Length: 116
Image 1 (cartoon, helix red, strand yellow):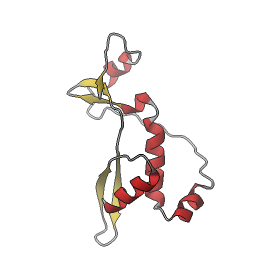
Image 2: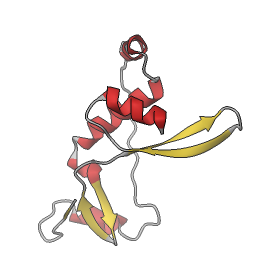
Image 3: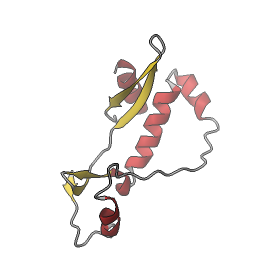
Image 4: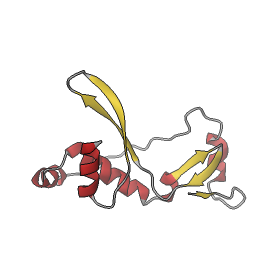
């Protein structure tokens, strides 16, 4: 993690807008053609959910702005943002939040997510 210098940061205005928000976040929605992805995942025996979470997070980690967070009220950029997703326990019908650290490969990530 590295701290962001507000005097030179081109996104300082955004910091001013979000710094006092209870949930300082912003959503982005877009269409994405994943034709072939489900079959590719199935052929390898991976969970579709784990694979999609990994792929989206890997792409997001390539964009510095998506790795920005507030730490003690100050903006910082993390080297990597890990994953967090909901999981339905079919036996109880309850959801829980699962946190899984990113890994270098989908194979490593899928195995860790399954174990977690």
